[in-house]
Length: 299
Image (cartoon, rainbow, N blue to C red; front, side, top):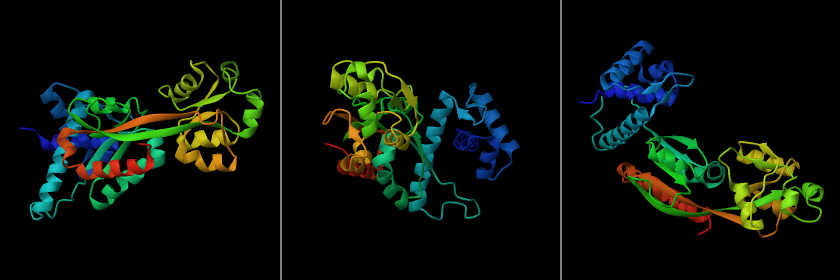
């Protein structure tokens, strides 16, 4: 038999980041949480939580957390049919769904997709941010139940649905263009022009260069891990960057930003992958994600 109080303690430590916060959420003492986690780890013979600030789950711990997530959804479904089943004296624990998406989707259309589901249900969200080329790994490792990803092939144990393509424009301020590209955008000019990059995983700028000019090139970069900061940095002439069309449309229309190469857009196909065990219970979320993406993305 699974020791569910101990398993819930593990999941809450991971969710809140500390034993003390988990204790507050579960209305027990930190000592009780520590004992439950320790006894479960000793029983299983594996470490479930990496102690630190914050505490994080090991690979085995992540799988246990997803199981508790599934159990929570089942219990919530059962309470809807049998409202008198729960103890009225016991505070109800709301289920937090762990999903992953890329920063640009979150900054453009994804919140509009999950908001209707959040408003119609009691579910809470923990939305992890990673590059679209890497969010599928969160599914593979059991860290999330669903993800927006660039991976077309279904992750093992998941359903996949095409969402459409997020369009990007390579943009900079007019003053920046005059300074660094007086004779047009060339590989030689790009090698000297400061650009923007989101993280070590961000390959969008290089993908745009390869698509537009035939091959990539190294260039000086500013590191900015923020979708909005990318646009702000372009506006003030700090560098050039590849930005979502929805966020730069007005800036391009009024001339505050210009395209490095007019018409040279980059389309990134996106897919919604959801764990099969949760797919039925999250069907309303999937419908909302697909419907919103249909309006926001290019088909």
